[in-house]
Image (cartoon, rainbow, N blue to C red):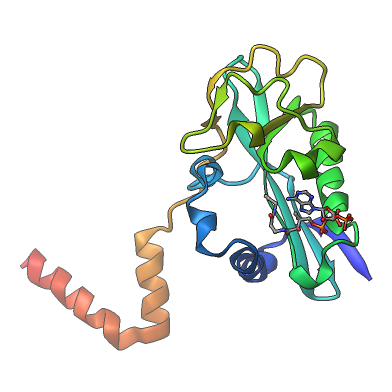
Length: 198
Ligand SMILES: CC(C)(COP(=O)(O)OP(=O)(O)OC[C@H]1O[C@@H](n2cnc3c(N)ncnc32)[C@H](O)[C@@H]1OP(=O)(O)O)[C@@H](O)C(=O)NCCC(=O)NCCS
């Protein structure tokens, strides 16, 4: 049975593999990625489609500013495992993401994607004409959907990331982890520290 649910920490590796398969290396070059890197996704708005233990779909939303003094969300990436496509799952995930965002009180969602696909969910370029992505983008593919009427009125300028920063791993914790796993390797580091202190 296929289930759409909130993403869990344990899904991360499978999600990465799914995105690599769907987009290849180009996923890191997307302008949307500039709005996602070093940020956490919007609270409560990361979804996974799973069939048993297998991760077969992903959709996330991210906090952004669209220059009209109101917050919005960026949708993406959305990807479905190749052998599970064209069964309505991508659509179900986009609808779930929209529904959850509305429930949490968000006003609008923006994305970069094919209008031929996303128009069916209410996305259009009607109110995104004065917005810019932080990198190359096709204007016809910059789309928006209001969840609250008027939320994209006056949207203009460069879209900016506003999500919580992803925490940088603490160096001391990394060294301690390494020490637990590979004790002898870390002794050199400790020795170096002693030499410096001397
Ligand atoms: C786009 C994607 C998420 C759709 O998932 P899905 O589960 O196949 O979606 P649905 O079953 O709801 O819809 C499938 C229909 O949408 C159409 N469709 C899919 N991508 C499309 C696109 N880019 N443009 C127009 N139509 C598209 C399919 O042809 C299919 O049409 P059909 O029902 O007439 O066969 C999936 O194809 C995918 O993962 N693609 C690779 C990653 C990607 O491009 N993601 C979107 C950009 S963020």
